[in-house]
Image (cartoon, rainbow, N blue to C red):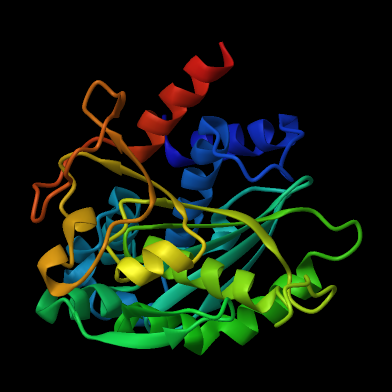
Length: 298
C-alpha cells in the first residue's frame, strides 16, 4: 500500500472514531498518528534539496523517494501535491518542519527533523542537556538540540493551531517520527505545562490543549526526571531500530515511560531492556500499526 492509500485510509478511519477526547492508547489512533507523522515528509524545502546527498540520513523511504524524484525531474515535493480535503498548514524551520492537519474530528500536529538536524545528530549526537524548569514545579534535563528546535517554533505553532482549530473545537494530537518524535514529545510536554495555572487549575482559551502524543522510532530526549515528571508520549518502535537506542543511557538519558516494541511478526514485544546501539529494522511502522489496528477492531 503506497502513502496516498494510507493517507486516505487514515482520514476515513479518523472520521469513524468517536472517542478522540479519550487520552488512552489505541492502535487505530496509533496508525492514524503514524500516517500523519509521515505527512510532514511530504514537504521537502529547497534547502534540503541543496544537500540532497544527506537524504539517506533520514530513515524515511518516502522522503528519499521525493529527493530521488527531484534529482531526476527537478520537481520539489510539497503538501499541495496531496489531493485532500483536509486543511493542512506547514511551518518550515532550519531544524524542524511542522504540519498542522485539521480533520473533521481531530487535529494532528506533526513534527519531523530536517537533514540539518539529522546531520548534527549523526555527527556528534549533540548529547548536551539543558535544564528545563517545568510548569509542574519540577526540573528535568532535556536534549539541548531537540529542546532548542521546539523552543524556536513553539509560539508560531501555538498561534497557527489556535487560528486553525476554531469553532467547532476538536481534540488535538501531537505526533512525530524519529527525531521529529523527540521534538513532538517535548512540544507536547511544554504545551501541557502552559495549559496549567500555577495553582493547579487549567487555563482556558490561552493555549490549545493536546489530548495525547504518539511517537514512532524516536531517540531518547531526556533524563529520568523528564520520564518521571513530564507528560509522556505513547512511543512505538521496531525492535531492531537503532534510533530509539540513542543517545545511550550511560550518558544520562532515559527511555519513555510508555513504550511498545513491535517485532518482526509484527506483534507487541515485552520490553525487558532495549539496550543501546541496536541495528535498524526495515519493518514499517505503518504496516505494523495497521495490522494491530485491524486485529483490535476485528
